[in-house]
Each structure stands twice: as C-alpha cells, then as structure tokens.
Length: 454
Image 1 (cartoon, helix red, strand yellow):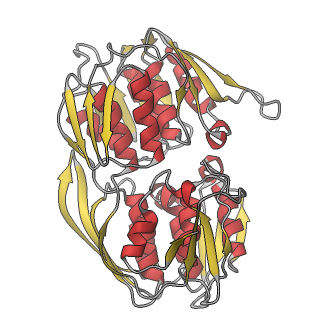
Image 2 (tube, one colour; image 1 turned 120 degrees about the horizontal axis):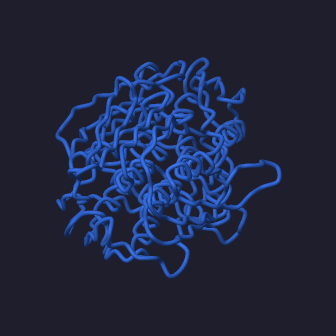
Image 3 (cartoon, helix red, strand yellow; image 1 turned 180 degrees about the vertical axis):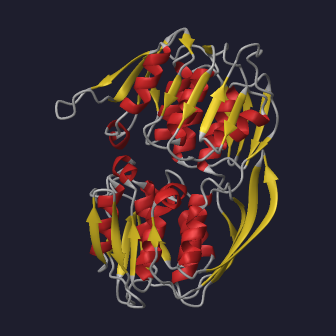
C-alpha cells in the first residue's frame, strides 16, 4: 500500500462538484467475490465467475488460493477457477499473502484448520495490527493448532502473522461474542471438515452470504434466523460442492458512497444498476431513508439467492437520525459513508453500538472523527461510536485525507470533498481506495465529479 505521507504517492485531487447525473455500475460485491473464489476452489469442477470484484482484497484471495494449488485465472471482472475440493489443496511453499484483507485471512484460517499441513499467513501493516483471538479460540477448541504474534500490552491476544497447523477437527457448539460474518464463515468452513455437528450462534444476525451460497452449492449448512444460529452437519455428506457458474452482484458498500455523493451534491440525480441488496447488510438504505433521502429501490433479479436492484438517488435535504442496535450492525461497513451524509445534514446524527469499528482496517471511529473534524464538522467521539453535528448546508473544508490504508475512510474523505467550499481542494491517496473500489474515481468522473489525478 502507498503511504499517504510519501510525496511520491498517487493522489486524487477533488474539488467542489456541480450536479452529478447519469447511470453507472459498481464492481462486484467484495464479500460475495471472496466467497465465490473460495467456494469455487472447493467445488468439484470448473467454475466461471462473472462480475468479480477487482479490488486488491479479492486479488489477495485469488493469489492465496493459487498458492494452495488451485488454478485461478482472473481477467478483469471474470475468473476461471478449477475446483479441487476440500481434499485437493496442497501446502503452500511460502506464506500466504493476505494483503489488507481481513476476510481473506479469517476465511482461509477456517479452511486451513482442517487441512493436513501447516499454513502461514501474513498481511500488510494494517492487517498485522488486527486482533485474531476471537478466530483462534473456537478453532483451537475444534482441534486446530493456531499461533501468532503476541503483544506485551495485550496478553492472550493473537496477531498476524498466523501459523495454522491443521488436522482432524471435531464439531462444537460455539457462541460468538459479537455478530461477525467473517468469524462465522471461518467456523462454517472448519465445520464442513469436522467430525460431528457444529452449531454457531451469534448475538445478532450478521450478513449471511456464506449460508446462502453454500446452501445453493449443496453443502450441509442450515440457518435459523429467528435464533441467529447456523448448523453444519457433514455426517453422510460426500464433501463436494457443486460446480456451477456464479454471477456476483454489484457491491452495496461501494454503491453507498456513490449514492451519498448524489444525495449531498445539489441538483444530482444518479442511478446505480445491478446492486446486491442482501437484507442482512442494507441497513444504510434504512438510515438514509430516516434522514429524508430521496431514494428509489427497484429489485431487478437474483444471483445465487442474492437479490439485485436498481437504486436511484436524488439530491436531498438530509436531517440527523440515530444509528444503533441491529441497524448499526446491518450498516457496519457503510458507517464511513453514512458519516459523510451526517456531516452534510441538519442536526445531530448519533452512531452507537459500533465498538467493532475500532478494529477494522483502521480504528474507524477515531479516523472518522479526525477526518470530519479536519473538514470543519463537529464530532463527539465515544468508545462505541460518535455524534456528528451536521453542517446543514454550509460547505465542508478541504485538506489532505490521511486514511491510514483504510479504503472506506479514503472514499469518505473524497466524497466529502465534493461538498467542500468552492475555493477548497481535497487530496486523497488513490492506492488506498483501490483495495476495494479501483474504479471509484473513474465512476464519479463519468457522473460529472471534478476528480483529478495528482
């Protein structure tokens, strides 16, 4: 990743925007793309993937699978994967490079926990700071040996690089301490390789891409949304996932930044086509509706059980609201974009029950507070959230965004720059955005935004 303090870093320069208009698409859903690649590798034949996310995180998953002996050929937004099944993976010759991707390292840790070899996983500086004890503890209970870097200041915590010595696993009943799709998915992958039944419960329903996709592919996975439990019972299963073509819907998190830009820039009218609207992760639509956003959502189809929609956003006079509880969980990845909407709104917007944001690619609560304050927005930071007092029509200030290698903070800063004073200019490290949305600037330029490469 490029260091934003490096004078040679590629930067985007953003000025105040006139009306945004037009129809666009976003790249394939990052979460679904990770799983499409991974489940394709575990299938019993050739899998063609269309609409693959082209961000750095998804490419990290593709590269790690190649290192494990899977043929993965990526060409733009298409991938050709030759599945080898759970029994066809081989030990990597070197450490798996997970880059900046928490999804890559967590899901592959669950997979490799059941394999008869040792795997080492590394990542960039940001990933190396992310705690992994919540992942290691249940996998150790299942019989895997997992070791990592320790820190004196946090005894018992585990950080990457991770060493995973796989082997024979046993099913367990486990209650996740927090709702987490990544942790849940890792345990599901381990459970599919275990003897006996594994039951996973969580205190709230996290996104359910893994359950939907694995059920579609024939895995013995069942979900009980009323109890927030997932059951994996491989007893009698042949261990094979069905090879089938996979179409990845547009990434909802990426689309949210485009929608927020349209909502806060006067006179804008923008349509985003082909967006995945899985109900476990579209809380941002409910938040924006509560803020008075002019949004129209039209479902246009499905992909592997995932609903797909056309979303229209028109410039709106937004007002403050409250984001907490289940709504906060369903909006967890879109909070940086929603914070920008709150910055442009009238009144206070309260964000709570978001302690998990402290351990994302950056400490997102601190980063959001820092970047909004830099732009002239009043922010009251708390342990599990923050309150934004909106500008209510007054422009933001420009400046240099320092996202600490966090793609969503970088995009939030860029979108807020479109709302800045006419004399201001905002600079954002371009490479940080490429982690998940490499066509971000190109898409906004096509809609009329003044975004220039420095």
